[in-house]
Amino acid sequence: MRSGNHSYGIPTPMKAHQARKRFGQNFLQDTRVIQDIVAAVRPQPQDTVIEIGPGLAAITAPLAAKLDTLHVVEIDRDIVARLKTLPFADKLVIHEGDVLQFDFASVPGRKKIVGNLPYNISTPLLFRLSEVAAEVEDMHFMLQKEVVERMVAAPGSNDYGRLSVMLQYFFDMENLIEVPPEAFDPAPKVDSAVVRMIPQPGRIGVADDFDHFAALVKQAFQQRRKTIRNNLKDRADDAQLAAAGIDPQQRPEHIAPERYVQLSNNLQSHKREEMS
Ligand code: SAM
Image 1 (tube, rainbow, N blue to C red):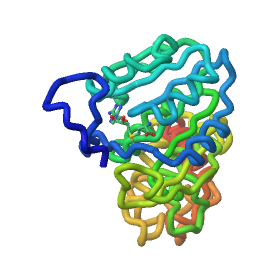
Image 2 (cartoon, rainbow, N blue to C red):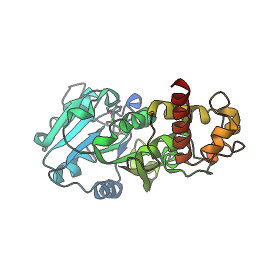
Image 3 (cartoon, protein in one colour):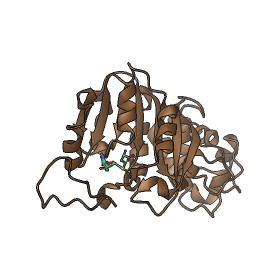
């Protein structure tokens, strides 16, 4: 922990920061990991880069050194105050607030998004970022290792599920670096990993109705141990499953992402035909 500061409550901006659990604050302290992340991002001076949760600037400082401007989104008021005192503060555009409410479109241009993310909001944040995939060049995130494994999982693996299908719809993803708890202060209880996400629209097909596709995938994985026939019994019959290349006896975790897109599109066009 960063303690041992005896300023007797005098609120100077550089007072040691006490990590806040509610904001998922585990600060990176391993120089090698920090260098590897920056090398993976490959920032060029003119790039539009947004860092989520700069914290005590472990990644912010080396990124800013390579950039003309760096956008940062930070919820913790005390950290925002510290950021404003940094020697490279003039390069920072600070967006104070909750990243889950942040309007990424307010930053013009194709964006590179980076962050050692607060693990407590990582899943809703990843779903949120999928909505802005069209404006993104690439994203590099430190996440719980277990979450990264679910994101990149292939059909047939225990980790393959709704998160894999929904993110693989938008992105090509790669597990780049595994990071042990000691790389952080305070150390989290879990292992971490850095994932690279590159938008690849249409890589598993294009859903005619995205909301229908998303609801179908959610329902398909509601009970992993059951067959797809069982999980989707109010949506699709065996013939409709077979038409999408799905064996009705299969479990949801054995079905490739593109099969879900195909099934959703078939069901939607069937519905349209019935209505016309
Ligand atoms: N980037 C720093 C590092 O690598 O050492 C800090 C990473 S720490 C895991 C997560 C950071 O995200 C903290 O600075 C925290 O205050 C910030 N944060 C937490 N929840 C947030 C939210 N909802 N919106 C924006 N920032 C948030």
